[in-house]
Length: 202
Image (cartoon, rainbow, N blue to C red):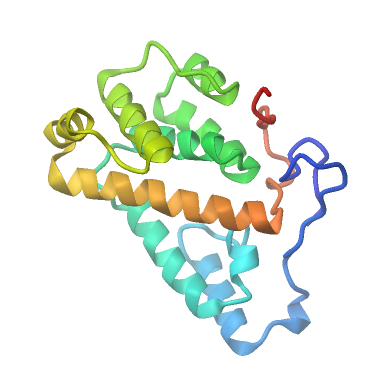
């Protein structure tokens, strides 16, 4: 995968991808099976965090299954899930997840102005009430590593205990894959549309 100058992961000049897609001939049987399962599943390809995860195919399979559950079968509305993913990607400065999910968030109904504010590192304004609750919960969790009683109660009243568990796990899942891609310097997919994210202002 060629690295895009605009969407390269990591802000250092010439920050080359560390764990790219291995050559097809270098894959062992377990790696080929894990890759084929991704191709045959809802993702329909091997990209993003699954490129570095190919080095551990058993782990890849488990991470992929968790991601499918959270992304495609959660009790949370798709609009909220996509916004949460963008909040995590922006907080952890991950190009791949931002460039992939910001357009999905807009398509799901998140206001473009809210995402642009988030992209710039600002607190989005004018959100729908459920989006406000989600952003409050996620930002508090990412910054303080916990949530206050008031924030927890607002989330629990809106989504119930299952929703709170899935929301918290969604944050953890995307933090995990963002960290993995940050370490691997996995770039955004070639041909990605929309602006990437810049380093936070000093």
